[in-house]
Amino acid sequence: MCPAINPDLSFPSIKSNYGVALLDRLTKSVLGIPTPETELKPQKLKEHFEGALYELFLLKSRLQEKCSQMEVKCREDERSFHSAIERLKKDLTDLSQQFCKLDTEVHMVSGKLVHLGDQLERKNLPRKRIEEARDLILEFYKFWGFGGGSVTNVVSAQSDEAQLLEAATRFKNLSSLCLELPDDERFLNAKQRVTVACQHLDTALLERFRANFLTGNIETMKSIADVLLLSKNYSQCAEILVEETVKTIDPNKIHFKDITRCLVSSEKLIMTLFLRPDSVLMQLMHSLFTTKLKVYLSNHMKEELNAQAFLTNLYNEYRNVEKLVVELSNELTLITDPMQLSKLFRELFAPYLVDYMKRESDWLTERLTGHLEHYYQSQRHQKRALNVSGWLNFDETSKQKEVAVNIIEDIRRAAKRCLLLSQPTAIPDNGKFIFNCLYHYLIVEHVDYGVTLGLHGLNIADPRNNNPNLVFFSIIHEATSIFHFFEKTIDESILPMIIC
Image (tube, rainbow, N blue to C red):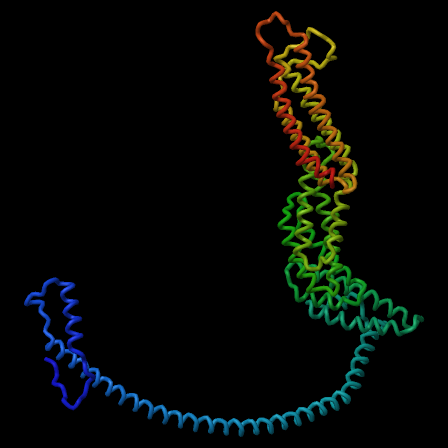
């Protein structure tokens, strides 16, 4: 039931005819001819509209009232917020003033403390130096023959690295004192004893350095290296590190990835221990190339190997070590000049590359000659002068692509090795030599000889034989295919060397 409408409320006038006509058209368009059930009742519709408008009016009134209350509350909150801000600003100003006063007092006190510390240091420094001089004289007195000091007591009395390091510091000062004393009979024996004691102490420290390297105690290694910095034995620390690092690499079971990882970790250790890590790293690289890799290459390229195995191993190991050099240049931060590793690389392979081209040419000549001899033997054919008649069986002179493929494969292998292993200035000449071998054995000795035999067979063919001789056409077909292989081999393998 719709609520009663207050007559005091005024609503905008509505043209009833327009709304009724619109509803009537909509109803008829959807339902067709109206029936009593679908008949439009304007009065009832008007009552519903008026009721809905009244409810909206009440909702608007409530919302306006609520908005007014919220506006009042917001204004009150704003006033309280501004009051709190002003109060906090005042507190901050007071605290800043107090902090400035406190900071001024702290600076005054710290200045007085520094002044007092300087005064204490000026008072205590001479006393401390006197005590150090006294201890130094007493230490020297032991080696003068009156205190019973000996090298054995100095070294064996130490139980750990800390005591050894402390003794090394004392002896460094004692050595400086000995340099100031004259070499006369009063001090000569004592100075000699101090020198021997320092040598034994350095030896003990080096042994501890090696032991701590094996256990991975980097901190103690750093302390020992720092103590020995001004000693003649300082370089032996680097030698020990290089020696023990290289020992971990087995020349009979070398894995180049493991070598890279080992050297990267060793570089970090070297940078931690030494003041000049670049020289120590190069010392390690030199030891690696001249010992382990040298033995590795000698095991893989023995003189008793046949030529093919030797050249194959040389090519493979050259590529492996070259890849190792590139990885080390990229991974090691201390390698700023790649020529340092390139020099070690060249020196490593120099003994094997001196007579490389002679080995390559001998192997290539032997292989290509062997392919042709094996082919003609399989055909039961013996190469003779072409002016002899009555000896040729045309079926046995058919060209076999297998022979050409074998020759070309050997040429490709030789060219690939030559491009990698030859000196840059010798690559064009070596490429010409390989081309001459390809031309001589494939074209002259194989294709040209076969075509000439085919022509000779046509000349001596019996004209009374009704069956045509088609062997020559087969020879020409195979020769054409071989020429395609020949051209492709020149483009892919020979030209890169000629234009190098």
